[in-house]
Image 1 (cartoon, rainbow, N blue to C red):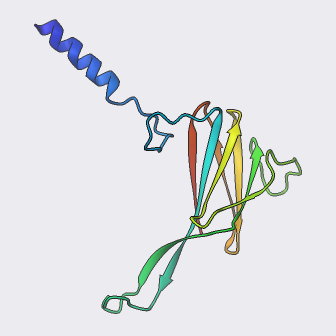
Image 2: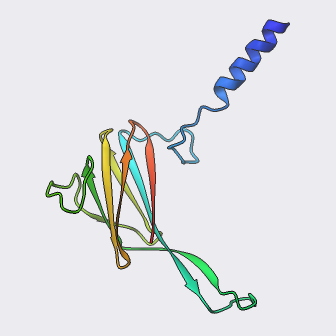
Image 3: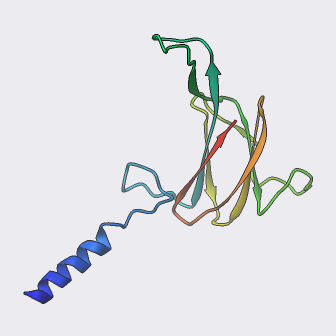
Length: 137
């Protein structure tokens, strides 16, 4: 009986944490053919105007940035580096998102350019996984 209990605990422990932390999809059967990077671009908008009677404190709103320029470079890349891009530049959609698909697993630098400035992030991708990068301006 004790062995059965230990076996049950071991099986439950191995199966309860099986979801990859890089993969935020809700569909458990989803698996990209190669690697993917989902880029999200937002900015925090502050206003002094009170909607719904806020007591003179103002408010913050998270706003998505559409049409932000997204560039992907192989490896560690800085603004003065003259090496070429891995993919042609793409733009974010109305929800401030851009999906870069069919990548080989590797180390990449993602650059995002908006009217608020330019930022970069680095990411290491894995085969059959989607990585997520958030840019906030």
